[in-house]
Figure 1 (cartoon, rainbow, N blue to C red):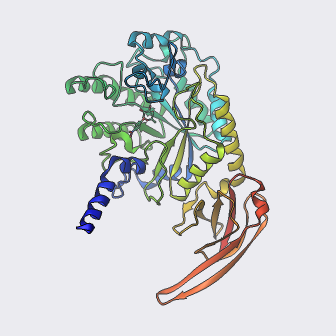
Figure 2 (tube, protein in one colour):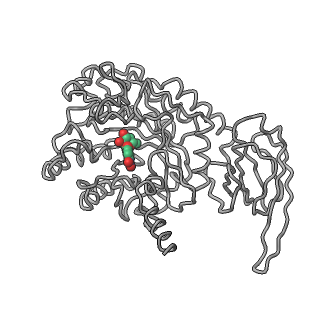
Length: 455
Ligand code: JFZ
């Protein structure tokens, strides 16, 4: 009886939504659609920039004296500033009228790309259209776009050109399911469900044509779709219709698993973890975690939940050691500039990667047990096999099951004492390398990387 109860407990744990949410998409048995090499750049890139930018950026998380989260409202618990229209109940005509004063005079696509590049990021994903339905490009499909603002410049076209100039991969977030302004687009879950025939009209008239437009005009390296727990509209048929449209227009565009969160099928290119979720085990398929610096994705002037650069580097290192990427979000201000706290963190992370990037880019997981707060990757360079050990907290002595020849601190070259033992068991042999770390190393509070030459 007791055992049965334990089994039921384990089973219900593994089925509970929090479990699924923590891990995100762990459908291990998925075969991937494009030839494997198409995703090689993505696997090696490790670090990307997500950008949430749109009309919501103008409201900065507040409306008529109320600030998200305004818990006095029925749906006021969420902080996401890009959800401000339904959360703080901004009347739709008023929200749409924001387009009449959208004028990001400080927008400079090349400056954005340079900032991403200096931060050590290798790809950029911009919201081409978020749930509010507003398009940041010159869309022939819809008038609710950037050309009907005082700015009248194709923001996406400029970003694409800047990415091409700086050899930066680029892609777009496109809200294919939710569209709050087009009749038939899906609405927030607390609003009435849209009829399927209305959704189909939206799907044929707006979603599919706009995605095609993005593909034909801008030839993106990836498309980022978004669904979570409600997929009554994104049926298998529609999911496959959208994938077929992408394949027909591009032989390189990668597709993320959230195109249909609960049923991504066999034909997507990489898995997407839940927001800010960091898996604890190695995942062999390409994957990434979309993550925020604060709580909100869109610019929220009163969201003070800034993570430190060190904390975010730990997430990056965790994901690298598990085979995945880290897609870190910036919510630019409505004028097109990056918030100063975001800039500072980007530059701090970039400085660390400038010195330690060798242990990150192109590195692969190394499946050995590690002490807490220690991560490892591996890489072969010029025929030599290296392990990289990331120390995220002070530690003086630890052992790893590797056959280490010598070790040094990656950024300074300081030699680290390592002694390797060969352990003989009945079933075979195993190596154990014991590292002695000088405490002076931790006068610097950032993550220390030990480069280990293996036998
Ligand atoms: C979605 C968007 O609604 C949000 O505005 C942002 O763009 C983010 C990257 O994606 O947010 C989500 C996604 C997934 C869940 C909840 C919110 N989920 O799985 O519950």
